[in-house]
Length: 329
Image (cartoon, rainbow, N blue to C red; front, side, top):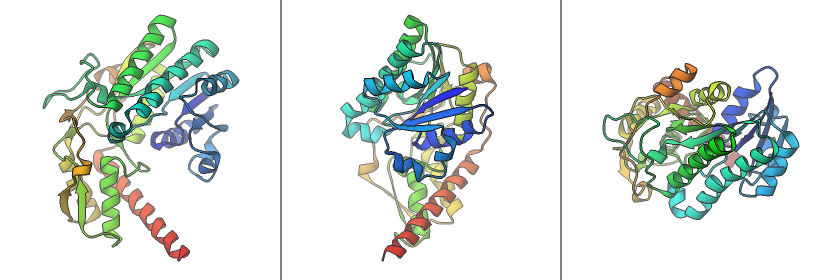
């Protein structure tokens, strides 16, 4: 089974590579915008790939040549500008990467490998915000509230169009918030873990800077999310969209309290205006019933373990940084 993965060097891509490569008969080929040396130096990724290519998904000719050369059985499109906050600063770039990049992938499959199963990784941000206590199902209105969400709504619509108009086997996800070891501190929970690890190491004072902590999110573990993607590649219905979520909402303030308890740190919490995102969703919780009915998937990793692993990973990364700086002095 030959599988291509765009965005392989990203947070989810690295977890997916380790999971997928363990399966018998899997030929895994990855592409990302990062240069080869950045991947070869990563022992957690490079051994699992049959080949790695530097790929700009906004370049249609590059994407076409990659798909034509490998003619995959399956393609997982992960490549994205994934930060809502960054999308407010660079909306045009975000749209090019997320919407035009998806269009280029779908066109390449349509013309060069129309039998390929395409898993188009989307975002629940396309729903905007739900009401307190509401679990959003796939038939909820699409109401993007920032450039990132708009770009992913366009991607979702393109996936639907290419399935229904051209008969491609495109399965779409609408993935809710997820975290775990390896996530960049640019994202909320990973950023909290990073600050707590630096407090523990004595690098910064016992103060943690946050954005809006009152929002409610449906957080999953990246390893559970990757398992859902694997099942959807095998069992997802062409043309359909599936929420990937736990169905349980958590306030960010409560998750921060759990992380502080795990770290054994009680910092002063300070709201940083730079971390408060305009038009952020108040409540975003999904209904996983459709995914569960189709594949039998359910999350297996409790949020407490996710947070423990996230903090442990952050502490180890900070330790390595401090050791490296010490050697350079």
